[in-house]
Amino acid sequence: MSFDVPSDLYYLESHEWIDPETGRVGISEFAQDELGDVVFVELPGVGDELEGGDEFGVVESIKAVSDIYAPVSGEVTAVNDALEDQPELVNDDPFGDGWLVELDFDDADLDDLLDADEYADQIA
Amino acid sequence: MALRTPPLYGRHDDRGAQFTEFGGWEMPVEFDSIRTEHAAVRESAGVFDVSHMGEIEVGGPDAEELTQRLTTNDVAALDPGDAQYSAIVDDDGVMLDDTVVYRLPDGDDADYLFVPNAGHDEQMYDRWTDYRDEHDLTATVDNVTTEYGMVAVQGPDAPGLVAARADDSVLDLGRFEAEYADVAGVECWVANTGYTGEDGFEVVFPADGAGAVWDAFANDCQPCGLGARDTLRLEVGLLLSGQDFHPEENPRTPYEAGIGFVVDLDTEFVGRDALAAQRQAGVEQAFVGFVLDERGVPRHGYEIRKDGDTVGEVTSGTMSPTLDEPIGLGYVDAAHADDDTSVEVVVRGTGKRATITPTPFIDQ
Image (cartoon, rainbow over all chains, first blue to last red; front, side, top):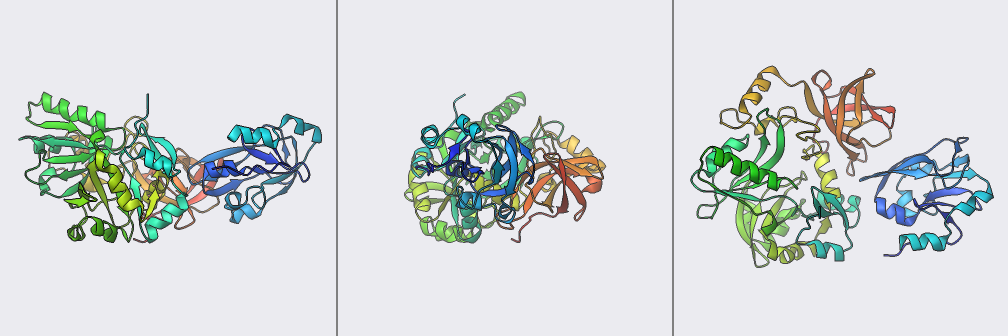
């Protein structure tokens, strides 16, 4: 099975993505498939400062608890409140409606991340 | 140590299953999704490969005495074709494992078949043979775990599915009764037992017939992995050996674990005196179900608090696929074990409100 890896996003080895245009962060299609049915997402609040590489929340599926890591440092400017009642959006649309948070971040930090080709190689 | 693999490993791999290590075995955890598999068993039927379960046969003139002495329930009460849920305890009454004991038909090579949990078969084989030798009993004990495969066909449609492939006579089996029947040309031991809270059967067969038996069911109902097996058993409050009790990490007696009904103090067995004493004195902690009243998922090892004090620990928890509510099982001090008691479950440092709730959590 092959997984979608949108070319306009940047990735962490731990399967988080960030959209450089919007600052949105989520987990990859590969990651949600590994986790299985997502049933609970724990996220920071708007205004919280995240440190790149540090865990900032938790995605829980029926079978596993998984920490999620910040791709870059930055301030949380939005949180996907829809996940409170519909955590399954992370499974159904991991690069779209299943996003987790939005960050205000420094573009220079993107250099440390994997591009789509590098991430696709990692999960191949 | 290399993981043991079930005879059906290749079929599961071809079907795209995800695997997990469980009790020293590499077993399918998920074929499609836990939700899909769980719903199939509650609404129609699903088939599980449970070949990680052990099989030990006991025969000979002292087979009954040997098995009676090493299990808590009354083996002598079993007629041929009967099955019995039981516990295997040490001298202190602490559970080493739980098991189902079958009395095999007259004329079989062995008199009893019992099914230890995954990874316990060698320990139980040693336990039976050591006790036999120490007490000069005449009995054969054979660990046939790798010679047999086992599937569970569970769900409201399971009896019809099994009857169509075996024999209509299986529909006459009461709960905890078993018989031999031919499935897809393979002689199987078909038992009206299960671990899901639904109607259904567990089917034991020689390992070389595994593919034929599996295909006979998996082509017509949902293949299910250990993930759904866990959520299904949790919704009906059934114990998982090694997780809800463990002889070293979480030593519990059958009374503490809520299965006092498998202890027959009128029989002679290892651990009887300790259990008789506990029955008199009562238990300090009790095994309970609870529902989390806030968002979150209870997990094994989480603390249970009452008014700021630790009063227990979660042993199993999940988001119930049927109820769409977080549910859990665990031990709490007897003073706080009554239904409807409010407690807190500590999830990553935060206490979340929970209510002690009778099991099964779902209507059966």
